[in-house]
Image (cartoon, rainbow, N blue to C red):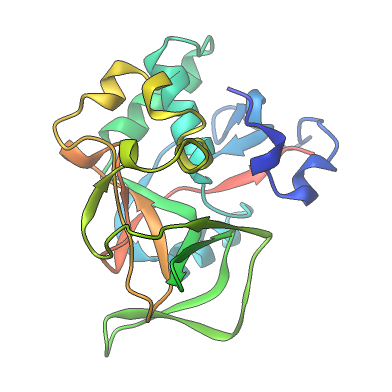
Length: 228
């Protein structure tokens, strides 16, 4: 599933689409629609966002999956659009895993939700059980949404947000998503953070496997890098 250019950081649209020479199908999978190489097996040991990012960079990856990459691949899996066996195995692994970190952090202020794509310099502070920004947050791009009238710290269905919000995270409007996603037990839900803190987001698990979660300090880790 090709993601609309409006949602992709500018620097990505300038990269040359060419498979990495060191690509090894036994160690990482190439997902052509988004021109990315994905770590095949999620690491079930739960770690904080900053430790996860450190782990995957040490292995030669750049970041976690962005929301539209993660859900876009899952949509392709659910609609049987993945021809290669390794990608089908990847989709299955993603659905069966305990969720995973996504390459985004969010913060609310003045009735706005700010979404930082590919955030860095965010560190978990165990003393207060919160994520804090270092001297300055680093990110590849950001997107703001008006959330006037939407309560904070309460589960809200994606169906209740506007179409641009749904497409930004899920690649499609709610009504155009696969039935398996729209009719899960918990539904497609999002919970907005308070204005005090920034928080990395993760894809849920179990009955919340298609939801976006902001609470919790740890999650599983999967690396991604752009094919150049």
